[in-house]
Every structure is written in structure tokens, then in C-alpha cells.
Length: 149
Image 1: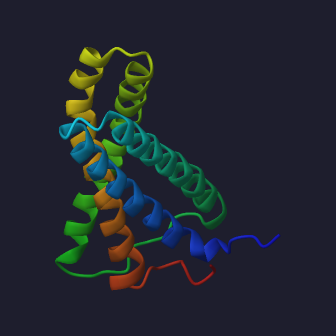
Image 2 (image 1 turned 120 degrees about the vertical axis):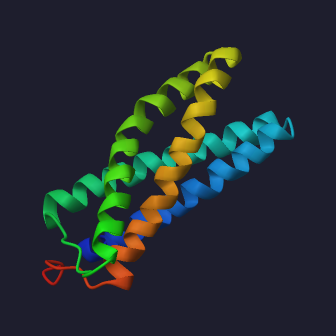
């Protein structure tokens, strides 16, 4: 069995975030069209993508440590503002999504809708900014400390 290289995990995580974004948006479109089963499948798939992301993210940072942003000049405050907002909202997203999911699975749809109207945009922001942060950190600018990967 072939293992994923540690250096490939950031790209895997960006792909998981992109997939999560796709399924969140598709799930939203489906619920607006009253396609409840497809909505449910999309949102559960987005949740699985997020859980897989979290597992790979923690594994990566346990083994690779901190990867320092290599950009200089005006992009540094832009990157760190994006990173801080992403990180804070990622922490907030977890309980929101878990509560929304548990309410939906318990058929408490009025309460589910109330939480989901907050959870969805925050979760979507976190997923999209996760891809942007990956692009800035690993593609647009050379990371510092990643040469050991």
C-alpha cells in the first residue's frame, strides 16, 4: 500500500476544501429547489470532506511543523488578515456545522434552518479561503521551511 507523501498533503487539503465548497454550494442550490435528498447527500459529503481535511491538516502539521509564508511587502498583511479570519472562523464553524447536522438528522428542521443560515456562509468562507491560503502559501510564494518536505 502506497502512502501519501507528506509534501502532497497541502494539495490534498486544498482539494478537499475545494470539494467541500462545491458540495456546500450544490447543497444550497438543491435545498432552494426542494431537492431534499440531494441536499442531504451534498451536505454530508461536504462534512466528510471537512473531517478528512481536519485529519490530514493535523497530521501534516504534527510532522511538518509550521510553514512560514514567503511573501514580502503588501501581500504579507493581506495574507495574515486572511489567515487569521480563516482560522478564527474555522474554529467557529465546527460547532455550527455539528449542531446544524445533528438538528437535521434529528428531523428538527426549523431549528436546523435557523442554525444553517449562519453555518453555511461561515463554512463556505472557510472552505474558499482555505484554497486561497493554500495558493498563496504554496503556489504564489515560496514557503519558508518547506524545503524539508
